[in-house]
Image (tube, rainbow, N blue to C red; front, side, top):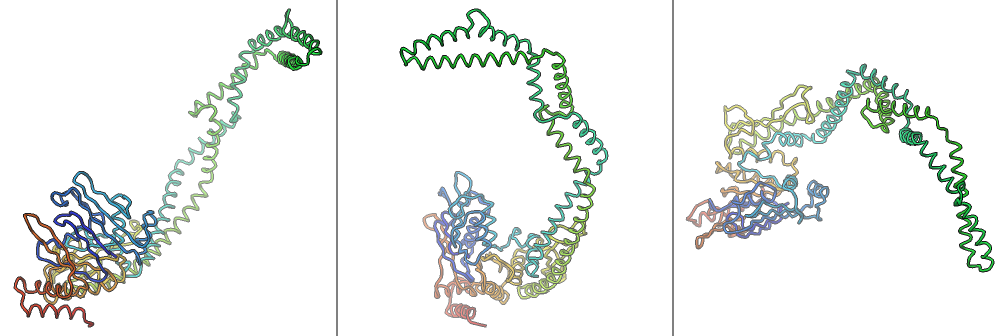
Length: 558
């Protein structure tokens, strides 16, 4: 629940800190005092749109902080954990507005996009007022509320899961069926291509090997000439290197017996002579093995040409031909077995559709039963809320099975007739804001066990009513507060007297400056405020006595 709200430099609020408790809290004050500023500030903390005009005059920045106790709120706690924004059992939302730039949003001290603030806010607070954007006007919210009322939440989740599985398999089937349409021609092409590449007998490393062989064969004369030149220089010419090395080795061998320090250079030169002998042997073997046959070069170049032609045909590099062959053979195998897969997938899609429709029909039955009960319960509440003859109905618009979706076989719509003889209309088209607020209150009371939002805010739900109806509205709000935190902005003493906690909003003007303050009222202060709401400017002893009686009656057991 909401435990604290802090406001700095917002509208006509300079500085404000409020500690809030559970149960029903009333906010009252003179017309124009700024009773709705607290609601606006809370909306900002929850991610409502903002503009710089909300910043207090002559201030650079406005800020709103809302603190929530998460104990008993698993949905909000789970969301925070998933986003890695959790901090024990408390959550702090902060929103700042600046004259120089855009607003900033924070969850537990960490900057977040506004969308995340809005997502979390949906788990924490629900605001009901005279505005067309409140959640009860949304079709999805109406459907979810009906499912919760009828105990069908789990079944609705199952329907959604079955539909998604059915759609995924159906998409696979359509893709496979589309490819099967030109299966015959594709098979012919793939068979031809696979045969052509198999006939080539190409391997992944052949292209590199052929390129190397082509280079060698095309330079055989150069290779042979070089080898002969080196052999001549090492051994066959006059003063050849080998002869000189051999002579040097013998000379050092003789003198090394006179000075052992010459042993190491003698051994090194002896090793060099051995290396020269081995080089000569390898070069002579290489020359003996060479066959200057131009037919070998012709065969290699013909093979390279054949591979290059095929590679160009398939628009790949020659070294990629083996991969291309594997790709064609895999597709060919898949297509050859596609008939069997198509049959199996057809059967699977039929089974998935049957499962989905069975669960969706079961959900439709639960919704039909819940719609009748909910419509009757809310219609009964409307009679008590100053709308005699008013009717409420939950309309289930059946969809053709081909158009059915993840949310079932029907569209859910809340329908209302606020006055006798008037036709039922969608809740979103109710003309009177006061009627809309009271109907929303009736829905909340009827579905009190279904909702999960811990804090409900009602902004002047009592517009256009008075007397006994106003007292009933107060009693309904007090009933709601049995297991929710309720904040109610009201101008009626019958509603305010039902509150468990009472705050007064006061506007003060001094030296051409205006500001709003909110104070929690103690027992005598509360009697004074209720009396003011009852009697206006002149408060008599009788008015005070009446105010005290109203408070006592509201707090006494029925």
